[in-house]
Image (cartoon, rainbow, N blue to C red; front, side, top):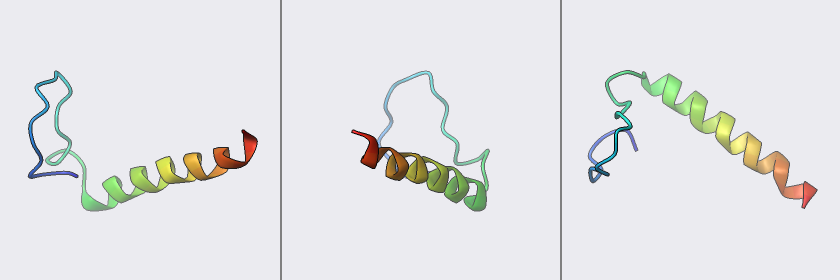
Length: 42
């Protein structure tokens, strides 16, 4: 979620104004591929 979420009260900044929609989807895709590949190893 890039905007409209509940504040977490942490030092980590929001990325909504720093990353484009395309960049957010690319990161999401990268993370999903990593989890998909690891499923068969355990």
